[in-house]
Amino acid sequence: MNWDWEAVRDFMPQFWDGLLVTLQALVLGSLISFVLGLVWTLLMRTPSRWVRWPVGVFTEFVRNTPLLVQLFFLFYVLPEWGLTFSALTTGVFAIGLHYSTYTMQVYRAGIEAVPAGQWEAATALSLPTARTWRAVILPQAVRRVVPALGNYVISMLKDTPLLMTITVLEMLGQARLYSQEHFRFVEPITVIGVAFILVSYLASVLLRTLERRLVH
Image 1 (cartoon, rainbow, N blue to C red):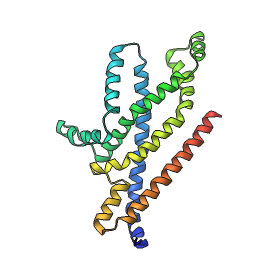
Image 2: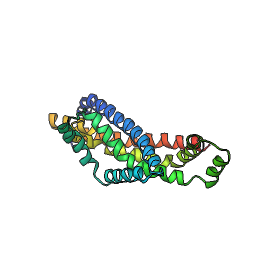
Image 3: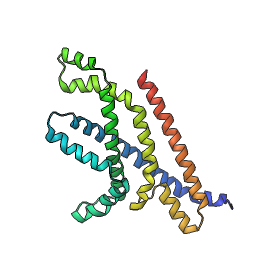
Image 4: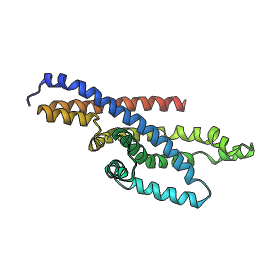
């Protein structure tokens, strides 16, 4: 293998641009998935089946269709209906929406793991429903689900290369562009491979630190 360090140095400006886009997609997509996942969970616990049924059908549909298909639909089909967004905005929303249907299940498991005595204590103290959720149930549930949510953050990171298919120049997109322009494939692909490993490791360390702080 003819490794060229000059090609690595030449690729680095594009790499940093791609890394920034990847991190933006990861952070914003994670926030959307965490918030929407909680919204789906709370809606599924409402007494009305007219709320639960549509939410259940929608989330099952999103969870059981490929993220790539959803990206293509949002980026290429919605503009036909007059809804046009930038490629990055579309990618971030698609990742967040797709993974919110998984984080929903994580939140559900965390809420169900809260001891029944906590609900009974809140009822005995006549706490309003909103305060019961905010002050009693959700803080305990979130502490239980941080490790599982962390796993989905890593999964989202590994799915960010799919954004290249809708013209987002994240790390893989930049590597592909550089390779096509300079006919050097080994160096840029290797660089982003190492970068994915490092970012995944750092994200895991941060999440483990957060988990320890929440436990204690």
